[in-house]
Length: 164
Length: 164
DNA sequence: ATATTGCGGATCTATTTAGTCCGAGATAGG
DNA sequence: CCTATCTCGGACTAAATAGATCCGCAATAT
Ligand code: FES
Ligand code: FES
Image (cartoon, rainbow over all chains, first blue to last red; front, side, top):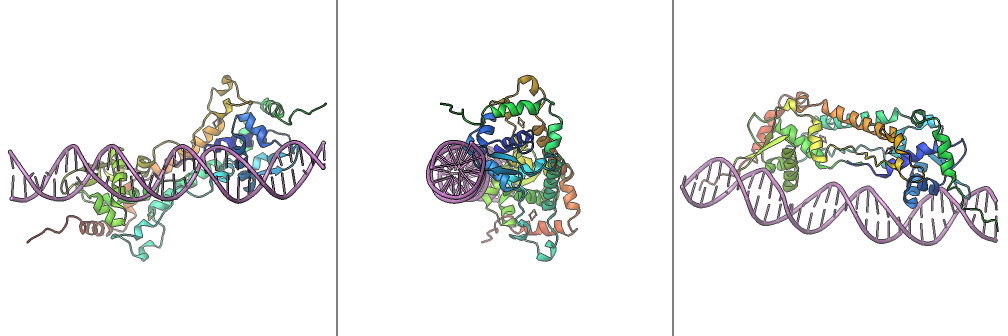
């Protein structure tokens, strides 16, 4: 049971995007430089977030990514499941109906006790992550964080304008 | 995030072993036939449970596996983590200290908010599984289950004694 | 018109998982 | 006491999945 390393990337990127002024965007290259990550691979992950409806993207010069909704309406669960999918890590294969000890179908009306408990556990995991929004995360950061983040991001904004 | 298929195998095998009379054992071959599983591979997983202290094994003729402790003292969590390890699926790599936006060490005294929340979620998952013991699972099975299981297991017990 | 950015697919590699094998050790029977 | 056989134990190999990378296409602001 392992979560992709890129999970941490997108969680932090989403937090970073939440610190921008409404309507502003940051490109994949900017975010990659900010966290020292492989730019092409990070871009792919951000695309997954767009497909999941968490981020919105604008193409063209000065384009980039921004939150698709207010930070208060984006939970950590939505970010994590955009990458890894929402399916439970435990997949019941109805093993009780196979082999010499197979149970008759009439005893399998309800889901297996073990499968039910594993599903409960996954639901508890999801509930915890769904209870925390990006706005909640921002609330515990120092008040100076947004300004710092914005200025550091801008440092990689557009390649130096050739004035000659 | 995915759990090995064999997780379901060992959960059911542990439940099966819990239905035996105290001291009795079942071999890997018996359990494999009971659930129609590849015997050598199942044996490998059961060995992992032995190493984790959940099961005990006896070698030699008429040997096999049995629970290492009373069923009430074995939780689903112990069985699952014996196979997959106890580490969290989310591994924080301290991404906040890398790249252009790296935070100074003085701001990283505490663990990252995101890492803390992910750890909370994993803890909720573990807590749910730790709350259910094998004895609890047996309690919801029909009272006739143990007798049925024992007789079906015995059908594969020892190879037919050559009387000639 | 051009340069910059996101988007999607195809591709390659690495890690994990699934599956199989043979040898060491212990018991039961002779 | 010895032997034969049945068991676990760990090492080894193959397949699948996920990680990571690349390149060409579409869209947009300058
Ligand atoms: S049959 Fe799948 S968990 Fe019991
Ligand atoms: S630095 Fe690892 S989760 Fe924030």
